[in-house]
Length: 475
Ligand SMILES: [Cu+2]
Image (cartoon, rainbow, N blue to C red; front, side):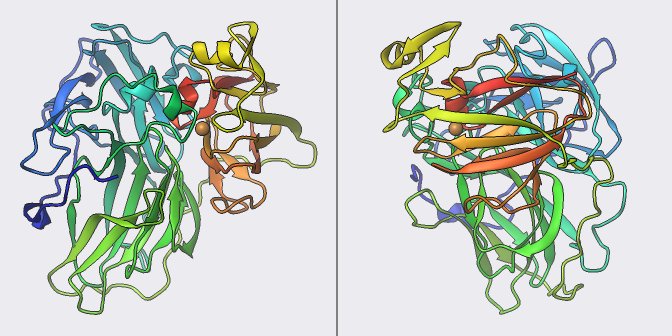
C-alpha cells in the first residue's frame, strides 16, 4: 500500500508539526471566528516529493491537513462561521458531539449545504469530554478524501492529566489514508468508482499521522503519554499495534472505558481511541506504531523516539478517566425494538432495492451508483427509518448480510453495545460508531434524548455514498 518510501531525513526528531488554533484567528462580521474551507497545499508525501493540492480548513493562516485543532472544555460553547471558498457546496459535521440538531451539519438533512462563496454560523454547546473530530458532511466521500477533517478535543472539567496514575502529557494523532499518484497529487476522477464502493471502499496508498508520512514523535523513557487517536480515513479500517509501549485503552469514541490492555486496536473510519502508553524502559531508542493494511503485514507508520532522562511518575496501573455524568442509561425493561438490515456489495449483490421512490433491480441500481441498501432502501431521505418519542430507549439490532465490514454511525447520540459481537466490540462499550463485520449482528441501545432528524449511515464514505444512509427521528 505504500506509495512513498520512508526517507532518512524524515527520521529526525521534531519533523512532526502539531496543529494548534492559529493565534491569527480571523472573525466574521457577526463576531464569530471564521472556519474557512478552501483549496490549500500540504506536504503529505515525504520531503523531496511535491506538496499535495488539498482542500483544507483554516482559522486564520493557510489551511492545513488535518484542520486546526479545536480544543474546548465540556460545557463550553463552540462558535464558528463556516466560510466556503471551495468550488462545491459543503457543511461541517461535529462528529460524536451530542449537539442541537440544527447545528449537526448533516446536509441536506439538518441544513442546506453552504454554496461556494456562502457561509453558515455554527453555535453549540459540547456536553461531554473526549476525543472527537469535525469533517465535511456534504459529498463527503470526496471532500473528506481531499482533506476536510480536523480534531475536536473536549477536555474534562475534572483534572486527569498529571494526577496519580494518569499521563503527564498527551499527543493528538489524526490518522488518514490518501490515494496519491506518483506526483503526490490526489488521484482524481475515481470518486464514482463503483468497484471500490462495492468492496472495502476507496483505499489509499499513503497513511499519514497529523498530515505527515512516517513522523517521529519524541517521548522520554518511561514517560506516560495519552494518545488521542482519530481515524479520519474515508474507508480504511485501521488495525493498530503499539509493541513495547504497554498500551491500554482508556476511552473509545470519547467515552471512558475501564483501562484495559490492548494488543491490536481496530479503529474503523471515524472511530477514536484514547490510549495510554508508557515509554520504553529497556534502553532501546525507538518504538513503532504499526498498522495492518489488510494483508497481515504490519507496517511502521510512525515512531516514538526516546530521548532524555527517564520520566517515571507512575506505577503500573492506569488511572481511569472521570466518568461522564451526562449520558442517560438505556432502560432495557421495555425498549422500542428496531432493526437495520445491511445488504449489497460485491459477491452478494442485492436483487432489488428502493431508490428515489422506485423499486429497481441490480443493474438499474448500479446505473444510479447504488450498490448497498438499508432495510431494502438506498439513501432514502424521504422518510425516517424509525421514530422514537423523546426519552424512549431504542434497542437497535443491526445485521450485516454482506461480505464486507461496515462502520455504522448514529448522529446526535452515543449508544451502548449490548453484547460482544465479533472481534471489534466489547459488551458495555459506549460509542458513536460501531464496526460490524461480515455476517455479524450487533445490538445497541440508546436513550433517544436528543430531538430532531438524525442521520444513521456507514462511515465508510464510499458505502454511504452508494446506498448506506438513512435517518431516524426523535420527537
Ligand atoms: Cu459500509
